[in-house]
Length: 204
Length: 186
Length: 200
Image 1: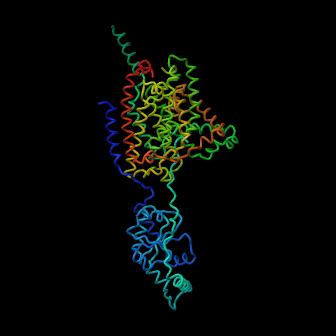
Image 2 (image 1 turned 135 degrees about the horizontal axis):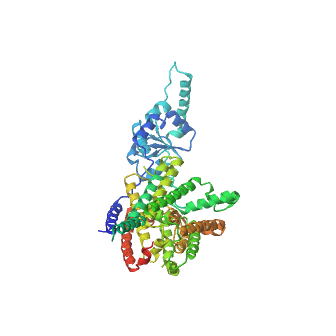
Image 3 (image 1 turned 90 degrees about the horizontal axis):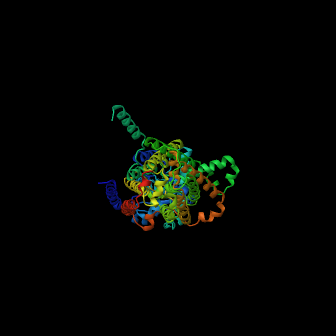
């Protein structure tokens, strides 16, 4: 059998296999376990309730709160301006522009930290950036911002400062305008993450 | 044949065999080899092969050396002035091509200075047409943003439409004009 | 995960070394195929030597299949791999001019370097000619600029245009190529020119 015949057979066989392969999106930006663990240890992905309070009070336009609990809990109460992406819907196509982008700071929150951390790990592993987790979740939010406890008599001036700020925040958030305002999700999806840069090549 | 003559005869036959150039590689095998090189290029650097870009870099290098202001002011060449990375990649690649070709030719016994031409035309005519062909190809490769290696071969492997269109234009035109230049070749 | 250089911040020196080594492979493959002979290359257009077709398609298909399979097993990110940008007029007009250059000169830039490397003087003149051609283009650029930049369509892939998978198109191309291999074989028999074939 001459080369031509052998080659054609090989090509056609491989070609047939290639033809039925699904359109695979190989992402070079995914994180492996080591990288993920490193980021978890750094804890830079966590946002404290104080930090969130500041962002909200300053009406920071880059902030987007994402409530990852189910829609029922969301409708009962959600943080001002938050949108609802229930964890089980996290990887739906329609949420991708919100999660994989570079212009907004997304802060996942849930009642505690379980669901929000899960959301963060999944999106971070996919290589998405600018996603954070609210430390302690709504429970912590209530205990520190909405109903802050006085640090007690042996407190440092720092702790007293924090307490004062929290009290002010509490008034801001529980004021008549804020409490009942169920703001709906922002209309426009954020700017999508910049396309991976193609290599320059060829003769030009 | 007497012994001495037989020896000389055998010796000269052996010498002839050693001097004779080796046959070309099976085209399909050579194609697979070339395809592997191309694939390696993609895997390692994300880009394919290229040749006309290297010649362009040489031209720009020359222009810059002789008249640096002109290169800056030139609409076309100034685009590539800052592109030192790209420029060097192709130039080094072509250096490899030259050395690789030389090594292969040396191994196969095909090294020889000559003007390759059809016996029906003179070497001078061949050189004239070679230069003219080069001129057209140089010009065309800039306009066409690539040559057969960069646009056609590389382009086809990544399924780029530009690659296919360029390839078809090149080969289509060559076939169409073949009749008019047949005297030079056959 | 490939491609290596863009994704792993490879040093420039290493990148250039890679370029050189790839060039070596390129040159060896071209010379071994016989592409350092203009009469062999031109044979494609007169039927007596269809090596160009065989090598070209085999190489493109090998690389194409390689990319598809590497992508499938997650070893290469095809979004980063270079895809030629499509400028309609450039591609067609440039191709026509190059086609003329091919049949007149009997070389293309890559093969001209390989041929010059083994001593072909006509190839060296071809290279000189291409240097002049490039200079000419650069100097007269302002006349061509509009044509050069027109019809930009982006880095379009054929599979996207036809709406089919990459692998599916590869199979189609393979079938076409196989047919062409057979036609080439027949052509070589029909347009046989032993007198030339023996010399090149």
